[in-house]
Image (cartoon, rainbow, N blue to C red):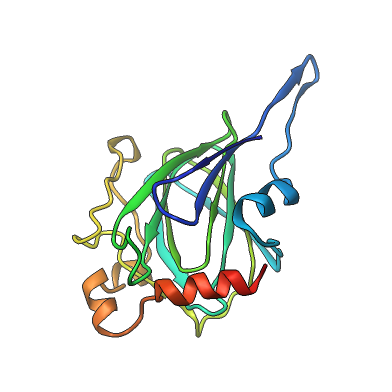
Length: 199
């Protein structure tokens, strides 16, 4: 499995080797020791989620308060999405910036996001099926969101996705500046300290 760090510290892209024959194909979509080697601590999966989205659907930008936060390992089993990682950690050298990876059922890449990073994707196809393995169970009291249309972040949504379709919750989410004013954003030093405590 090939690993590539993204421009956002704490985000990694994994591309598996696929083995094809006349029956179809086989690949490993997750190896615990490979991920642990790159992040420096075990990744304990406490919940698995799946979403199915029509073309143009935008989900995010979502994150969980740290500690404990919610690290994610994301794959796309069907169709294609453009998956975004947004650095929301105040004090991070990459604060307010983003990177993106195409996840699809062709290259079958996976994306890892550390605690405190924002996650968002836009569906490029109908029935885009995304699976998330996460390090903590969903806690609505600690789940937070930033508007994916926040001008300070300026996500570039691909034209092939068409008109963006957002939930009422994501449409009402604050901008990055508003979330920072309200003290809703994770602290970079606290996120790093929490990650070290997992080692």
